[in-house]
Length: 284
Ligand SMILES: NC(=O)c1ccc[n+]([C@@H]2O[C@H](COP(=O)([O-])OP(=O)(O)OC[C@H]3O[C@@H](n4cnc5c(N)ncnc54)[C@H](OP(=O)(O)O)[C@@H]3O)[C@@H](O)[C@H]2O)c1
Image (cartoon, rainbow, N blue to C red; front, side, top):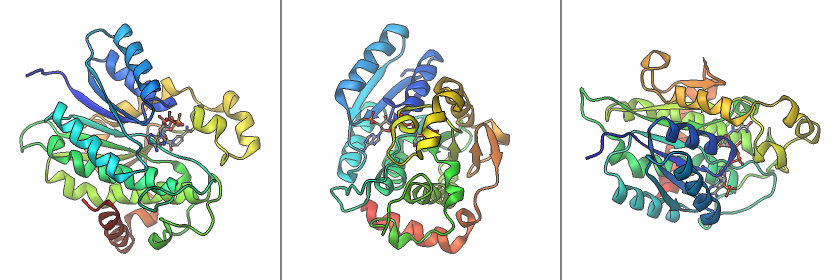
């Protein structure tokens, strides 16, 4: 059995996911890249194999809006690797358009909140570690935009009245993601699995450069003021090291620094109603 570490990255065809894949491959990791576009991910694999011939790169295709596809993707991943060291739940959607998933969930919620939950629960057997062995890590890519959400009405997540922009449903679904992280971390720890909710900071990517939900004036300044994905990916990878940040799990990190999670994310009754909804919607 290989002693190389294995990372699963969702949304690796994007700005931040692409930079994480590149840096992990350069650092000696084997990768499983989970993407909806076969064309883009095949090109990415060719590029990674050319730059890092030693890295084993496997591709799994799935539209993460669809929970059935996530479950099938997880089965494919488990057939490749019985042991996984890190899961980067990186893929994300920022849109003001109402798009509904096959299971009837609005796309910001389906991709930003529900998909990471389904993926981590399905991959849990391979992430699980026994006491005394190094812990594994789940990084849920959240956003500091979650601070814009002043409430978390879980009944509205699947079919919100208004989608809004950066501070609308997107921020609520990222608040829900951060809340899921603080709620789940103690239970995951029993299995030797750590979880951190990590915001990459402001990064110039296809999402921030082109999303219809980005305020026009902000979009104009993205190429000038936002960080490069390569720089922020390094911070994401550091946040995924079990020994960094004092070895603590369940924490929120933004732009490389630990911060207090939003109050709603540590509210026990909000956590309980969210986890109830996620377990129903995941239908595991
Ligand atoms: N950029 C920022 O300033 C910023 C700030 C805070 C948080 N974030 C978060 O960082 C993460 C990465 O974002 P990014 O800025 O790198 O954006 P990006 O370049 O648009 O990348 C997003 C990735 O998610 C994938 N994706 C979207 N919907 C999907 C679906 N239904 N199924 C499968 N994959 C899907 C995209 O695939 P395609 O290539 O097929 O579109 C792409 O690979 C996201 O979670 C985002 O919310 C970004």
